[in-house]
Image (cartoon, rainbow, N blue to C red; front, side):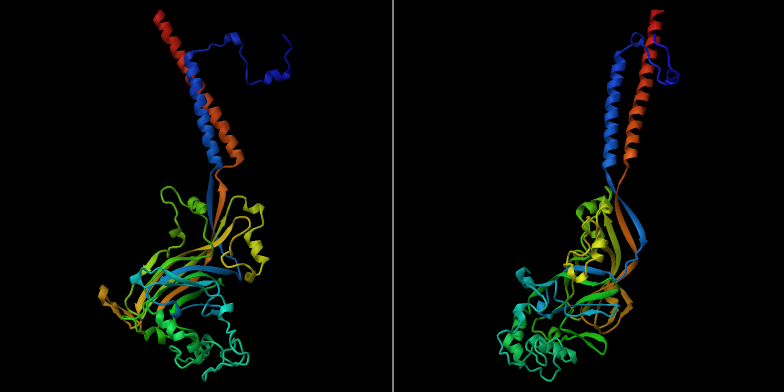
Length: 441
């Protein structure tokens, strides 16, 4: 026998000779069972290691000077597109009146005919088909006593019906159907409006606004400012041949602030008991409101919360913040704002409360609340007033277990299972021996 080294005395795993080992059938059964249990537990550790969870954080929103995109899709089955105007204004003093860029107006057939889409018109600013190219170069249209609009195609003139309408709006004059106005009769404005009286309209598209408190609204008639008050020309809205008049019955198909979270993110944000849906992020989707009163006002008060979604591994790539900081807002296409090259998404969730009232005033005695009084006056339409929360939610994807944790779990599963199996095997073996001795005696 070779001489023992000093390390031999430190061996904690003393060996037995082959002749001293006893193999039993019960031991084989325990071994097979323990191997199956080890495989099951190791597979569970692997699945846990591969599972991605979303860790939410609530922090103070320190962003400054950012923009925000609003994506909307709203149908008005009882008012034509020619009468609807979309305006945006915020607390910074910026106003966007008669928004056209990035927005489509979809003409809808009358409700009695099914309300299907008739025509989609992309309202791009200064589109080529709106330029009066067929006019004589020396032609200068009359503005009919109103000052020419500063953005007119030809300085000091009103070349189109829209420019005459802008000129009238600048001095708060009602415009009507443009009767006896050369430009409008040439373009057929009045006849076009009367042909669409029974139609509906769907407004869809994207608008980019400052990330400050403000509002956007869809109301009838051309908008303008009168003594620093925002007003609309309601003449064509109320003076209509349609029986019962136009009303702001509407359906909000979709309204969100910022890009849509991917479905995989919504799945991870929710749980099995209560999975997240798009309604958790955009609660106004598929909202319907009905009225028969032309002078009716709907108001939605929205609280917007900034939300970041950071996928696994986002920190190893250039992020959305860096890409937007280095790129001017006007160079980022509508609809792509908030998407990062690393897969991260900067978007917004919101909560909402709503209110509706008749512009004629009165109380709510019809619904059992005669003590509730409504003020008279206002503009018919659908108004969205949004406020920005000072807090920000960061949803960060993480692995539920680290590599070290996975290896530790595997070792624990193997070691624990074999230890328990050895104890069970020893107990079965000793029990069988004792029973055998009792039978022998």
